[in-house]
Length: 332
Image (cartoon, rainbow, N blue to C red):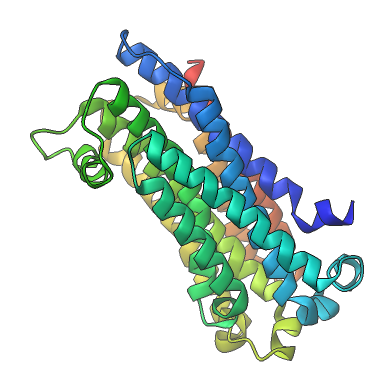
């Protein structure tokens, strides 16, 4: 039980739900857009992709707590697991077993799908999580950006996977070098050789990723405010320690304003949406944005420190609403 708590199962379940929601949407989308599209062995390969992603996230949680024993004794003594319930050496061994298993899966997927991208993303994630826990977490802003970036990478990874699956089924040459070229080619609409389906796949994945990035970046800064006393004990240079709470509130407001501004811009410039259709098609996103607005108002108008906990909770629900979007769109 203590080991499961160490892995932060709620966060891992969110990763699983996010990736499978994307899969559900993309399969329906691809089958609708291309009647000849056939999935060969895709369910098992996608399961392995999700499993390896969860292994890396779990290993990241372990190594994060491994380096955070001192701060956790101050910030969350009741949640301290390593040294109290699990020896440090077993934590580090488990961390490396998880990462090696995930790396092995990445080698298999890169070989089968003829794409270097899985190996690259897995290696990048493993190393970023290690250096984040050991060093960057205590540096100004960069640790927050790393975690938010890796969170935003989850839906993008799912979209890249289905782009590769589609290209392979279409018979395209998908060597690792060509796969990276195709990802770039499929993303930019102004390229005359752009694959329309590929562009839509990546646009959806990157939109989800950007939303997840800014939401999580704001949450990471909020958590730093909540952990300020423990971070001071280890001389960390987090945003609230360096800038103070008042200026940190402005940073949080700015981060939460970006998705609101992007969404408002989309409403203004996407002329094909009428008001009623807009609410129907994008209802989960509208709810997610409204929850972010409530979190923003909490930060602006509430004066006591309870506002950070409330804002954090609102952002969690906002992310779950955004997660529901692919499944919701599939049933429209």
